[in-house]
Image (cartoon, rainbow, N blue to C red; front, top):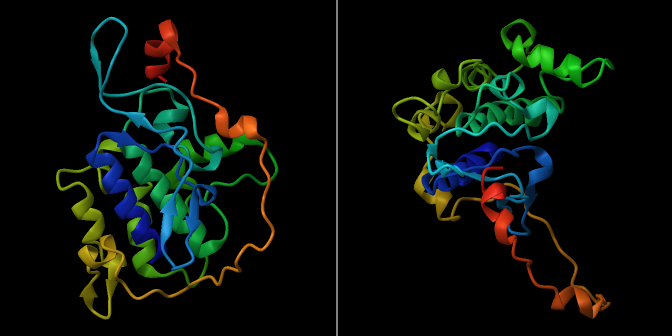
Length: 222
């Protein structure tokens, strides 16, 4: 399961207090040895974070992410945290199996997409032949209540890992082997050695990160 590698990546980020908030196919890349890697961490958020008045905030209210992957609480401006990543995981699994997202619009724009997401139970449908195990985990991940989503409950990621969707040959997936990258690769890419040097403007390599100075704390709440 490609999604199992995503689960491992999300668990690592969450264990360090980081919500990804940008899970989508475009934020994943496949290495030459068949491992899936998470990239594009531009929307990551450390939780909890300290506000400008010195308080500790466990949720953030910045609307961000890919429209078809955002969770209901983001659309409704109710504040969001780690559960948005579990919602997006459900959308990702659906898209990996269907090549389309469950709430995509029929040409009526983002407003229609958001309306479908908020009323997810009404619009979540599965095509004929959709795997039963996948239906089960998707329904539990795409739950309108963030506190009731699979992964956001008491047992955290263990609930996700223990789901029947990740059972293979009547046995559970060996997550430790997966985390170590020692699993049998189902797909690898043959990369050709670069024969032509790539020239970059010297100024690019000389660039340094700018200090935000007085604005650094403001950006910390993003």
